[in-house]
Length: 90
Image (cartoon, rainbow, N blue to C red; front, side):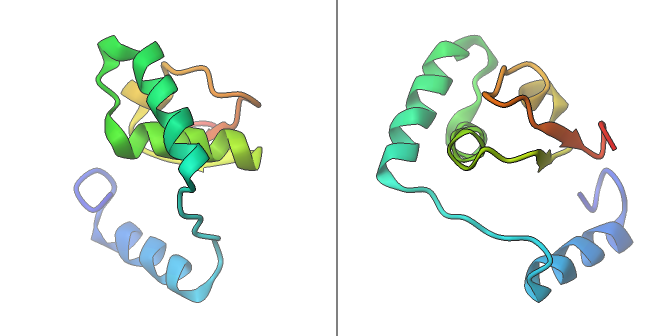
């Protein structure tokens, strides 16, 4: 984020996370299985553990939005519920 948007935006994001403005959810065993299926389905994208896990969490939690600058991966994968990608869809 610091590289793409700037250090001020990165500091604000970290402050928001620390203050509880956003929830942080950690993966469960079932999420890792779902992440593996997503990664396999989109093998050509080489999603990796973190992106595939975030996508699996988004599906389980039925989130309305995902904050990401990684449109190459998140913009290409069909995530159940079709959450908005922020800031792109803001």
